[in-house]
Image 1 (cartoon, each protein chain N blue to C red):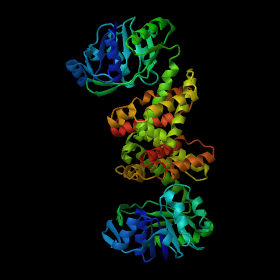
Image 2 (cartoon, rainbow over the protein chains, first blue to last red; image 1 turned 90 degrees about the vertical axis):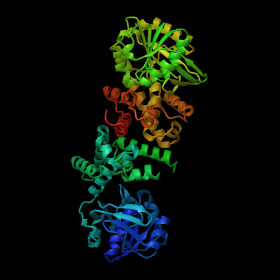
Image 3 (tube, chains in turn yellow, blue; image 1 turned 45 degrees about the horizontal axis):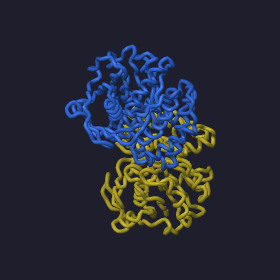
Image 4 (cartoon, chains in turn green, purple; image 1 turned 135 degrees about the vertical axis):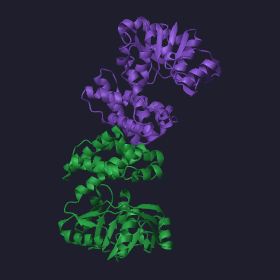
Length: 308
Length: 308
């Protein structure tokens, strides 16, 4: 099976490596020149649970020409339209496209480039860290839930779940994946944005009484807007999940902190809290916490990086 | 005239120094031991527009025993109750008490210790910076508006304005000072809290489009809540004033940034944005921006300093 990994950061490298080792023809796609050079010259260096080098092809998105059986989208949210634009040759009438981006609202973007029956939405709790160009750190285990956006795609979606599971990615074909995508977005919408703003670890945010008040207000906005979108969300269950995740991740800085504070890069805020603000407006639902958090993150981008 | 300066930070030192030089008996009060020792041993060192040393007495609040003609309150907002508690011997039946603290809601606190006819509310655009213990930097000019809280105190209030003006403090007896106090609180509520959160200068906040959106939302909440409190506030006029102030102060970090980010001290947020949240609740007016800003500042206090 020919698989392109469209966006080969830490998670793209994990999925690419495991699918490659399971016998698929995997090609990594990325725009980061140092990363491309390192992998071409020395292979993909893996450390963590195992130490090895994997020889796996990597190219720039616009160099990908062969029609794929499967494309796995793993870009940062704001890079998605450019990626889809660049890889149009790769996406044929039967190419399955699996979206594993963080955040909300990607279906609409992908639908412009891919027939709905070929779109598979997913969410994963696998983790990975890039240690530098061409070097990924992989530890512990995870799983992935996926579902075809359109009932007509269900059989193909189940085949893709098999392909992923044969690569030990523990894929579950989920009859209702959208609530899980919202639940993960809500984890990001509470931890990522606030820790980036307050320059703190997840445990520090959740140890603060006022921090917790903010977390609960944000969860509430996610749930109310999600329900208005027709997504079955339970506020108590999501709150439990967020609290549980905050415990296991207490000593970590979330990815938005790494992006904004540590590396002065633009964030995915418009696809997390910003998406809830946007969807809330469509339903005439006030989302002042998501609004202000989104504006504060953008203001901090302006301060640290300059205007877009 | 015997005058106690209750809180001898930068601004207290400026007022104390000018009133002392105009021939009044001025006693500084403060709790900072290094500051007290430095002024007792070497006098108050002044630099900026003039370089000099002024010999002026300073003592701890609980050491002040002589009944004053005038007490000028210049503490940080959260230190006000402790200060008033400590200086009860000083406040006699005819002692005028002038409040020059930043923020909102101090009348209620002062009323517990001082008859209403002796309370004078004020607001000033004078500036000053402490360079270290016993050393204040004074540059440029300013003015001060004051008004007795109660019509029965008006004659005394006008006398105090004269005393201040004879010390070149450019005092105006203002028939309607409360809107000016709100206007200054609104400047603080837009610049101080956001620059402390975003770790930026005033000019950086106002150069950001999202920063400006936040500023306008906060001004709106201050105006609506102030109007509900019976204070005559004009949103357009306050917006102009905030924008004007942001230009002249563009290269500065506001005092809350100095307190929280630079010195890891608790902030006055509960008397600025937090006061608008509290008053808004009394009137059933939603103030989500002031609510979240207050919670974020408290969460940042928790992260940087620890819980109170």
